[in-house]
Image (cartoon, rainbow, N blue to C red):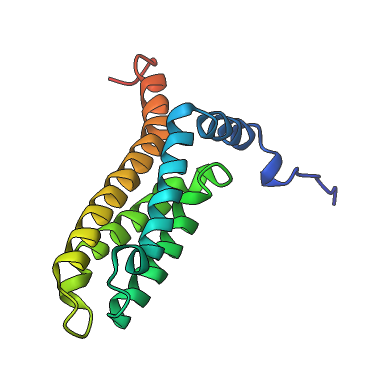
Length: 156
């Protein structure tokens, strides 16, 4: 029985091209801007109880700290893992939405003007940045591929 040598999937030309396209997309000014703004937004979200002055609401302070760190981890590494950006961006969008509703959902009486204002603005910005990251990933991967397939023989 003759043994056949197969190259690992990581060395497949199509996969290597896809990774190269992801690397090029992560280096675009748009992706870099989204990543930088996401880091700042996540950092503010994590520190917002102490910045905006509602750190006395322990449950909301801990919630914002955890959500801010998670948000930074999801979108802050945009350039390093661009092939997973689409799913990570949707998770980050969920964190942004959670941030908006957290003052009314977490335990305790934490829905006060400072916490509501801070969380609504931060949550809206976080959600918009996450949607921009998801859109960039979809446009880059799905959009160029779909445009590239149009006009191919047999695609009617």
